[in-house]
Length: 279
Image 1: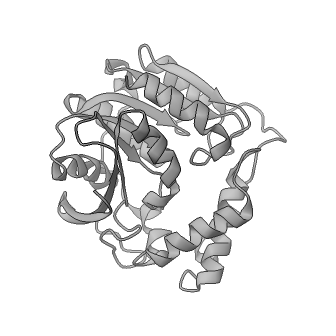
Image 2 (image 1 turned 90 degrees about the vertical axis):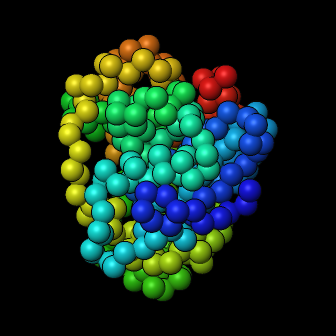
């Protein structure tokens, strides 16, 4: 199935699959303000070639999915969690392996705690269980994005410049070169209904769910934690906390990787770990 719109959790979400429908489903959940394209095509194909039905989708307010007025998201963080299950429902999938990155990792944690019957396993990337005592700041750490209101998101060149700058600021040694990032960011701009909404509204959505930190210890499904060692948002202490608090979780540090979707230089490692974990 190519890219298609599906009704899910009361909205329309853009979904794409790679691989054979007879293979185990693997749902990729992206970070905040991230369209599905950040899970790169070749990355998805590698996982599909390993015998998985790979599913990626645009969060609401990103890509072609339902968009809301800038600054006025009419949804909560709980709705974003429900969207992930809605995608599986729309595809007729009862259970799936779930891979969540950054905000998507938070969604994956909540699914593992609140809807374990829908998950075969959970993989958490570049994410956190909550407040963690941070080590002293490292000079090797990257930067962080600036305030979204500083960019004219209606201007293609300005939007692409900003998206690329943010990836580089949060990246590490293996972050893709600027030419590649500009091509990817341009594609995202061209297929996004409202770029300003996509880069604003997730940060404003209310968090109405009950805290789950104390319930991570109830997770019994296989859990894998993948985390960049130079992540400027969440230090390795966050990954270590997840691995410690989820029984049996396995931690795999990604050397010199930042807060980013896996760059091509580490796809061999990342795809091998995910395929091993979901076998």
